[in-house]
Image (tube, rainbow, N blue to C red; front, side, top):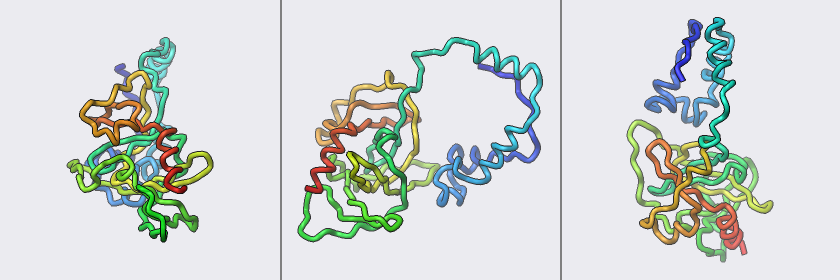
Length: 227
């Protein structure tokens, strides 16, 4: 849709398009805020943008746009959090997540050697069992994907299944993604069997092939590591 440009307010600097997540990722505030939408500069620009004056033609054009019937074929009816392990971009439904935390070194548990169990980590004064997904999914974490023009954000993903929380270390965090469930494709035959059995499909986004993990099956395997 081509809309009539609304008048802009002086003082709005779209740094997110130049040095933020939509630019070259050189903004030093990204280390603290992870994404521009969490930054006070972005929030201030949003407030000023909402206060901008608009003319009658602009409002009428948008009113005509929203009177059109919704395109069900392009409905974004699903959401996930996208992250990377080794060279593999993966995702889990947003409903599985408690929060995202900075990396923390796990402490080994004596006499516990279940596959994938790296130990426990302390996050905000609470202990979480730390599970290495690379070991569970047969992903070589030594293989690192290099993407130019962006920083990488190694994080701990705090998730929960059936009341039990877990911490999952990841090499990079892309963020939230909304997508149409109808657009999910079958996994490629070349994906290793250890990973492919956990995938329900693949979503294409921004040049990435993102594997959609089966939350139920993965949750069952996480629970087995604690038995």
